[in-house]
Every structure is written in C-alpha cells, then in structure tokens.
Image (cartoon, rainbow, N blue to C red; front, side, top):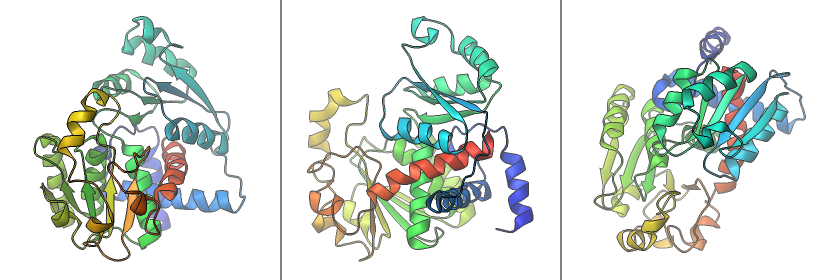
Length: 318
C-alpha cells in the first residue's frame, strides 16, 4: 500500500468506532491487517512503539473472557497507554444506570471504550451516546476483533487473501457473521456448512453477499460439510453451544453430530489447509484432537494475533 494512501487511511480512521467490519471499506480493513503485521514485527524486534502514551481505555465486561481481557490490556500497555477493567459489578450500569448516562460519563474520563457484552444493541447505544471511540469486543451478533485477527493470520500464512477459500463448519453464530463480512470485504470465497435451523442471520448474509459481489467473491451456505470443505484453503469451526446457549448443549450435540471437523473431513480440503478455531475449544466435540493439535492447526497463532490486530485498531482509532 503506497505511503500517501496509508496516510490518508490513517487520517480517516481516527476517532472512528469499531463495531463491525460492515462499517469499514475493504481498503480500511486491509490497512488494519497490514498495520497489525507491522506492529507484530516491531514487537518481535523489541522496537518500542507507544503512540497512545497518556491515553486510557475503559474495558466493560458483561461477558467473561481470557483472550479479550488479556490481549486488550497487554496491547494498551505496549502502546504506551493504560487499560481499566470494568465488570458490570464495578459500574452503576449494573444497578440500573442507563447506557446513555454511563457512556456520557465514561467519555469524560476515557479516550476509548471497549465492551464485551450480550446484546448487540447495547454496543450501538453505547457508541451513539459516547463521545470517544467504542470497540466491540463481542456481542451476540458479531466478533469483529477476532475476525480481524483471523484474517491477519491467514494473510501471514498464505501471503494473500483475495481468491482464497474459507470453509466454516458449525453454528451460524456471531463468529461466522464477522468472518463472512470480512471475507466479503476482502474478496475471500466463503462456504458455510450448518444444520437446518442454525444458518447465519439472513440480513447479515444479504449484506455479505452484496459486498462479496463487488469484490468478485462467492458466499455459499449449505448443509453438507464435505461440499463446503472441498478444495478449501482454510477450515474454521467454533463450539456448538456458544456462551449464552449452554442450556441447548444436549440438543445441539444431536443437531451437529455430523459436523465434527476430523481427519476424514479434512481430506477434502487442500493438503496445505489451515485449521482455525477462535477458542475455547471442546476437543472431541466440534473438532477431533488429531486436527486441532495437528500440523495444519494455527489456533495459537490466531490467539496471539488478537493482541496485534487489536493494537492496530486501537492505534488507528485512538
């Protein structure tokens, strides 16, 4: 990406919210991925880069997390800033204060807010009321930080994104929504295999197909895992019962019993396929141990890249 173009993108990203990849142009997402790669290089080389010195990020957690909490906190520290952990029990929002009043108040103290919550409308409402950038750390609809880290990982491993094929096997949840939108914006062909009744949200799918058409990419949703995985460069899966759906665990085990990513299924993919999982994983359920711990697995590279991708987002918008 040319220097002038990078400078222009850097300027237009300042002060933006990061709520979903749907809000970002293809060149903006590519810029964030390349910035993440560069920040990772700097970190590995021991080069200090602290553009957020003196800035503070408030991190609201209504849902617990390992990767989100640690990666944001460490990332903010490495960028020279400070991260403040705020559980719902630490805030008056847990005692009935409105999201609007909480957003207005926090905006007077903080330079940015990250929230990991249940309802997507909570993030939307928070962003509308806040006067500082808001980052979506996960909602029931999307997980854009994870998707950005995932496409960074694929970019690093494959050297490109456009024209590759990603196969997603499993529940049509928030994770697949963000992966689909990322694929659509980056020109990645995407195939989903999921049981009837567990498909991705229809409106999200419509938006993704619209964006994919502009980039010359294809999106296919079906019920056959073998068809989805055929000639895939990447195979991705997630738990069958995401956080908030634990009560459906037994029901979902029955529905997804033929959707395990195992040694038999991956034979249909390209030999150098990457196996990806956003973690935490249930070995022996959505994926066999032979695949998740095998030579094609890049799950811990993904996990590491949460740090670098989120640093790119924070450095760009804060």
